[in-house]
Image 1 (cartoon, rainbow, N blue to C red):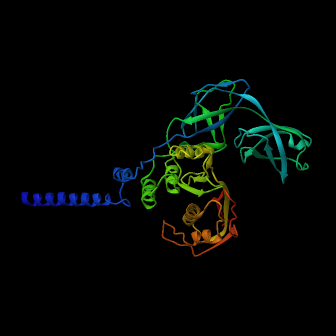
Image 2 (tube, helix red, strand yellow):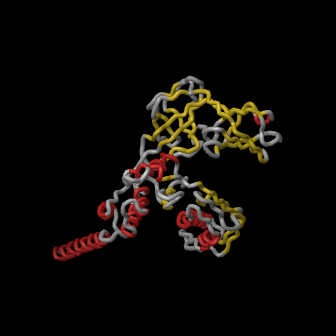
Image 3 (cartoon, one colour):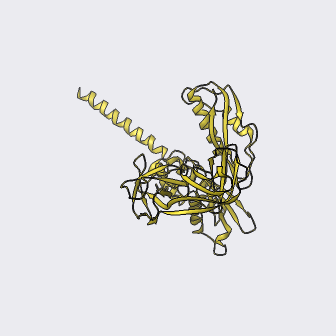
Amino acid sequence: SFLNALIIGTAGRAFDIYNQIQALQRQLFINTAEGAFLEEWGDLGGITRNKASQAKGKIAVTGTAATVIPAATLLQSNSELQYSTEGDETITVVPLTVFGITLSGQTATVTTDEEHHYGDGMTVTTSGANEAEYNGSFVIVVKSLTTYTHTVVGSPVTPATGAITSTATLADVEIKSVTFGKDTNKVSGDQISFVTPIAGADDNAIVQYEGLTGGEDIESDDDLRKRIIDHFAAPPSNFNPAQLEQLAKEVPGITTVFIKVITPDVGQVTIWPMKYNDKNVIPSAADAVNVKDRILEILPAHVDPDDVLVNPPNGIPVAFVFNNIVPNTASMKDAVTASLLEAFREKAIVGEDFLKIAYDSAIWQTVDTLNGDTITDFSLNTPGGDISVSDGSIAIRDTVTFLT
């Protein structure tokens, strides 16, 4: 009947209104506000949502010497993300003086006198060693800006002797992603190819050791909420640690900041940022520069910029090898891996040992979100104790391997 339809329609409309009121009630509190309502809370503390950003960094383009790589040249990853070169660069023969070569088993570690421009998987040529086994062309794995490793056939004496040179024919090219987002970041050894081939240049370029970094998605509600809560919990004042932390976290990708005042000397402050939402949690040198630049914007007039030290901490990788876990399921293994990552994010501190009880507790407290199972037993092969950490370093979770 008409009356029945009217009653049902009115009841439905009233139900919708109550649902809307309930949804609006969630926006009254920082802990539950979302979207534009959460941003309004941020505005009260001068905190705005971090925008998405582009990745940038350097690649090594190999090929024939004297070949020019023009500015604005497009390259593309396997996932069809595009990158553009920032300036004209020329492929040249780049010889580097080798400070030393040491051998452990069949792995040679090469240290150069100055920074190289290599990436994992590149081929470089070593010459000048008195021991012939060290000379030749080798596919390398880069360990730092001045070291890399490769395999050696034979058992030459160590360290190597002679006037040794490491040579590669390459262009050191800076690029930036065309699009925005975390998926534009790349690690050392990743390959990207020219959209339009260049005569004299190899089709595939190799990402250098420090990778392509800085690409971030627009800040999530959860990350923005944490910054807002931190702001009200520890109100910043002029150049106090709370303000330095707030400014550092305004740099895209920075999730955690460690600050030591009066370090290393009176009148100085040392800041170590981290990027726990990224695959590589240790920020790049470029990230550190961005953090420092942001902080210098509010530098007191009497403070020397050189007294503000911003450094990526030295990561101490901690690999986990499990003899067994119970229950021994794929979903539990995934849960343990995630639990260990979160433990390092929450408990690792720059310059402090990472205790065995911290990672043991994380394992025991793991809950398999797929079915609610908990760990009833496990046996670790490694590590076997506290993780020793020196000043300026921090323990980071490395690979997690299950032997069964």
